[in-house]
Image (cartoon, rainbow, N blue to C red):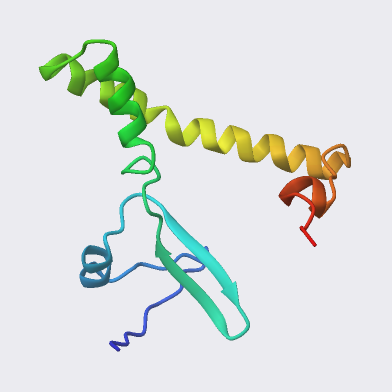
Length: 114
């Protein structure tokens, strides 16, 4: 394990050492996780990078797209994934806060067979 002491600015900002930034694959966002004994800062993995890529490609190919047109449309569609997921999470949070989204574990996962 490698260790490095970093400064915290008056605005509570820290700079990730370049070697760590590059090695871990940071981009423009970091996830900050509070733990009992400290804070874990790790790169946000791009949810567009593969989770929905196969479905997007399959749909575009079924529409008859190929070559540069396929690539361009794929990039456009992939950019829409993250905002759509954020919207779904916000809607779920709103349901939980309002109490309207409450369901039992049996409703969510099905009653356990006996």
